[in-house]
Figure 1 (tube, rainbow, N blue to C red):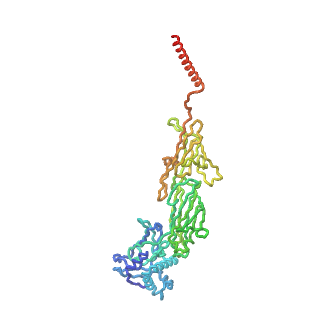
Figure 2: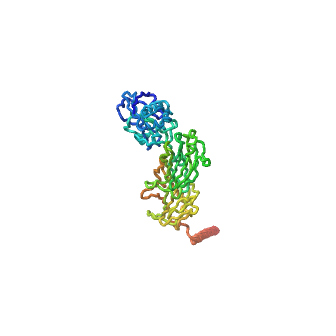
Figure 3: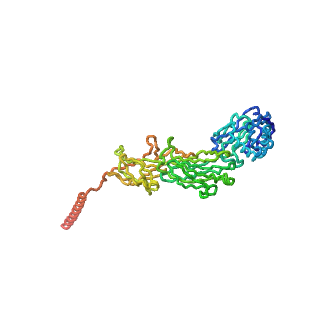
Length: 526
């Protein structure tokens, strides 16, 4: 193919770069002798991390030493692209012999037509994908400081169609594809966004505690993507609940200030096991120009059930972990679906052992047949319990209609009862009956469960019960409650003692009377 030499205005390159498109321009003369260069694609969007970027060389380039001119040669098989799309592009008289020159003239003529460049980038990228054009180079975005960067090293000099793994297109350019003139080391900023979702408990928590049988309120935030590049567009929020949570089928969806409805088919909700899918595909595509960029807010609740993980999660069990992600169209030229990075929340629930004891000196003994109620933080409500296993009790749930619930529990021979499935907070243990020969406690015993949860990740950093944290040897913290033996208290004696006291008082009184009478007689005699 013919080699073409054209002088390019540097101002055109600067204008194109502002839109994320690097035009047919020159760079510094210091790199003119190099045959390869480094290209980096940078984004501040964390969703870009791990995404792939493909580079298709449309023209090879040989810049001169001054950096004001370059020789561009059309690369194979791009001649077919310009010939088959000649009518759509408005190219006339194209032949095998002149296609390279015609192609150059066409692209050069787009320099100061920003939207034309964007449309051409889309058309070229889609054609390359549909026709399985060989990719010149592929890079994967990685974290670099506060940004995410895909780096092409030793890229042959040339003019490239750069196609990032697609998502929501740019609100200004309406395409993910870019045109980049690589004649020296260059960095371009990715203007497109990738659909993401942020899942929280309530409005801002990544982790929280909950009691078995209670509701956990979830919130999912996303944005309506720019779908202008797509004929059809898939947009689904896929939420996966842990085994310990039951979906309550109470989804609400708002976009901006508008509340959506399933009745008008704005969205649909489907479930498969623990997976809940909220499909907004039709809504985000219809009249997209007026919706793109608006916030999506999804709320729903789930109930912590009897299968909830209790205690400290480990590598073998992440606990009550829940996650949400977005599934979205990521290739305008094909029915290809991408997924966002999962956004996670954590729901924690805890336990403790009541250990009933009595002491003989310094020796501690366990005590059976003591009966207790578990009260809430106000000391007024008795928590209904269900026996989970031998001497292990959890709070009753609304689904326990066919299960025996109890409001009192009794200590066994080892004095130990486990209360499980409790949220962090304050509880009280009220002794309702003491074992024979022991005094019943007059006041309830306070039990406080404290948990420290990382605000950013939702990870459980520590937890303790009445100041005692779980250990490898004692994984369930223990609350000891002591009873005193009911020994007889001293009193003033029985009935015999009372009679003796009465007789003594009478004798003293008679003696006093006799003395007074005798004393009177003595005075009269005198």
